[in-house]
Length: 265
DNA sequence: AGCCTTTGACCAGCG
DNA sequence: TCGCTGGTCAAAGGC
Image 1: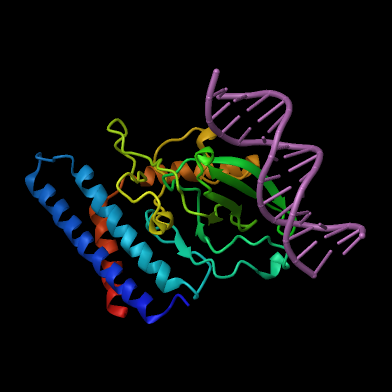
Image 2: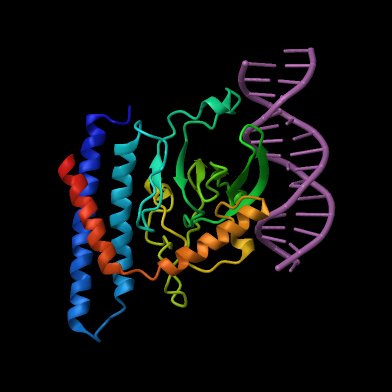
């Protein structure tokens, strides 16, 4: 049972922490706007804070939403695009009891587009699912040869909405590889170098992919059909434009969101 | 050269 | 046991 009293306690702590971090971040940005030209790479300072705040809130959301719904909520913010749902039961009516067991060490998340979770994945298969007539991509960690058993399955969940994907993660990463922030590419809010590589929370934190990517690098959850691929790229470029954040207004939204949740608990 | 995706074949779980 | 279908393998070709 995920919604135990202890889980609620954990969720409260996480939301509280996220709220503190976002307030801190807001102060940082206000300081920046007062000092005018004296902008000392604020994004570099803000990024770890924002990441930690989102991580805390996402973790809390995961707890609060588990057992309630397995359908992801599309956020208006591009950052909080996906919502984690617990993998308590993979058998839906469409599964018709024919799914192989994914094991306990798996979880799913819904997203409106492929995102960068900070790990490198290699596609090893693609299957058209008969029941839904949709494709499912099979990915495993690039560092499988180093013993990392992490996998993920990316499936388009709807014919009518080509931008909605269900991503299933199987096993956590045991490899030490993680993306690092490159000085030459400042616009990479999806970098995760400061996060514990193997933590479950890390796996649940999904920021939008904002860096330009070539088709071959679309291993974050592409589907095989050209149509979907094209759609995905179209969507990705839209998000890329959106990633020129109005950080301040985004923060106000996030803090508003955090305090609302905080009060409701 | 090395790593990637694609894709058909094969394996295995389930009714 | 058989057939269906999801999951994985591996060869081929591309970048």
